[in-house]
Image (cartoon, rainbow, N blue to C red):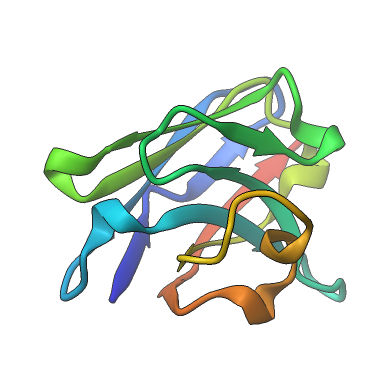
Length: 125
């Protein structure tokens, strides 16, 4: 299973770091992605990191502000969120997949084997 944590109530411009920890499966053999769901909106792909941590990929709206990293020895992935904006307000979820990195399958929630419970991030102006 996966567990996301670290959410909170923030002000625009603040920074926040979310964590995602895994247990019960071979964490280091899975690519990990972050998704978010804002109230009244569909789930959105935020970014991902390859199983070895060498590759990352982000949705355009967070490029240059969010950074994903991982520490496989700790079964953990992190989402560093900088320069937060009110439009970043959402429940954030981490998910794990073994599907191939290349292509578009990682952008679809149906491609994931494990999901964590969401952690709420609220950004006020």
